[in-house]
Image (cartoon, rainbow, N blue to C red):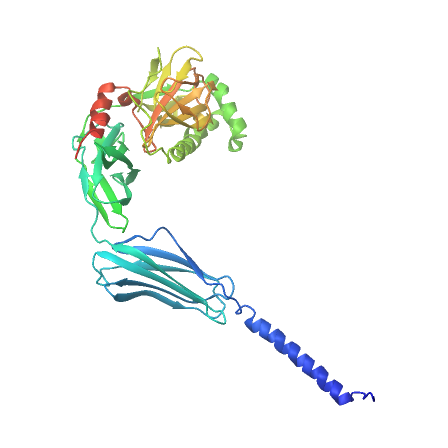
Length: 450
């Protein structure tokens, strides 16, 4: 056998061929690597898609993490006719995800009330064009919900609690009560065995000084909204005013505590510290309380009248308007959001009614504080305690000991500051201590039939 040495030209051509193949392989990988995949694009929606009403917003998030989106489409079908809502094409490989927002206006499309189908589809930029489709049954609904007010006799006290019960004609996504521009959530409740809603409304203290517009609103699952004005009789209520003289001994006793726990106060004198505490910290504490009261049990946890501190004398009433005087000059004002009750030093403090502890700890001007959720947006607050014997998330019964009275926070002597909140606002506790008021304004309204 004779071995033939390859020629130089042949070697040269082999090297060139290998190089070309390598270049083509790299180019193919660069061009097709991302496209040689078989995963389908996907989508998510913001909220459930069940009912479509007037100008219902629809937000869909399409995505394809590999070859990217090439096309998305949204359409409605009813009675065999298809109505395109959105059709988009995308540059190759540029969009791995994209949010599509559509305002659904069935009336403009001349759709009728009743069932329809929402078609959602997408395709990617893969070599073989992966795609997905999804059909969602929906209900076209143009009619707003009807509101039936059950509590037509509403006698309201400025600073008190209004209790409203009503029904709506269909399922709703949002419902509650407006007082002027302030909205207060309503809670589902059974009224004589039928579904309804209840709302505890905090009546503004200054309601008697200007007209107050009270109305119920309800928005159904299709975005259709209706409202109903609430008739009411506003009773007369006056609040006290008081001038409180600030002493040097009080400032020396209380202000260093706030200076130590609040860096912005370091370097300020005692009077400057009080002015800051009475304004900035007071406002911040109220916002904290409102945040705590945003989430409430959707059921009634309390029963019977609310307990008042035993053998206690009132030191200050709800709604007292205080003017603070130092050296003959006005240095601040406040409105008292509860009732101050004093008995003996470190007297036991009992839960006014059954509920769940949602806060237990220090809270600025309120000192050691306990807040209890009684359901349906109703809360009680116990402030200035010397000690706390309960914990957050703990269930308590009416009369359970929460701690002992004290003078923590902005308190000049041992006492309990007791407050009640409805809809995140302070209301007059005296109503909830009165069994006749509870019977007439709460229990009877919960028993109203259709």
